[in-house]
Length: 107
Image (cartoon, rainbow, N blue to C red; front, side):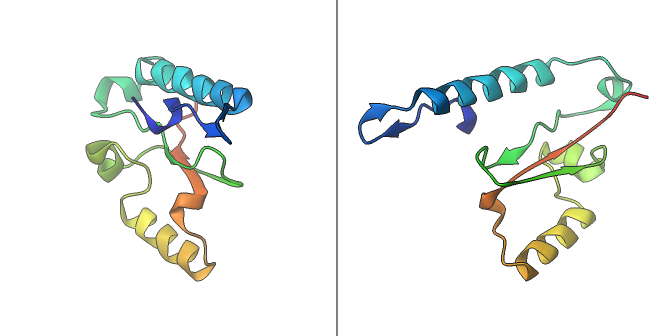
């Protein structure tokens, strides 16, 4: 089960809005993992859904996944990801405060 699918308790009571957000993220993740609508589906090793804090105030979207991302199944792990980490560190932003993903659009 992904981090998005965990149920959050607030002061001992179920946080319904958070639970629904987690459910929506999990459904979206499952749909994306099965997607074959573009040419990337024919050659990819992994689907890059995204990782990080779903409640983040910053959502970073990169272009189509590169070789390193495809091998590891994680966003921003190649050279551009290393540069991004340096930029975020210079801005005092921790990756756990972000939600990062890659995007492959259809033309």
